[in-house]
Amino acid sequence: MPARFSRVAAFFLLFGLAGACECAAPRAARALPVASSAAPLTVKEGSSFILALGEHHPPKLAVIDPDDRLIVLVESYVLNSNMTEEAFLALTSLQVDTAKLEGVTFIDSEEMIENVFTKRGLYQFILSQGLAVDPKGQHTVTIKVMYE
Image: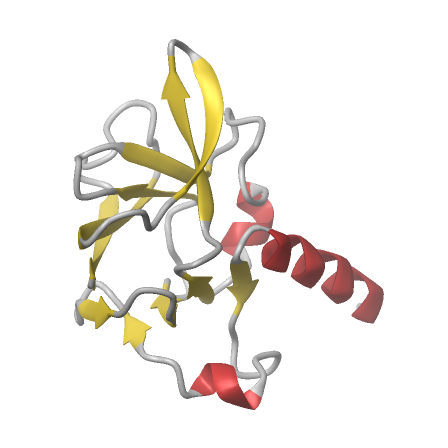
């Protein structure tokens, strides 16, 4: 298990995501502010926070930025997804670094990797069963983060 954890942790850190659970999180990560569907959060530029996913959450993750663009983080049809849906489903929370988080947008059907937090405003993290069909549909969970 340690070898598997280190590969997975290295992959998450590469993309600005780190699994943050009580058993594996460093002490500094435990003190980070937590955003959940029940508790929106305001974060400062360059800061980190914990995105509380819950135990049984949908398998796909995206962000809707202040310009209403969909930025995909976890989705099976995206070649440059941050992690597999299986790895994502195993997590109950994520540590998000606003300075490093990247996601995928589509321009003329081409995947473009972009930084997520690029301007001040409301970012809505969407946990969904199907981002391609309806990212704000009935089987979604929305976690709001105000970025200042």
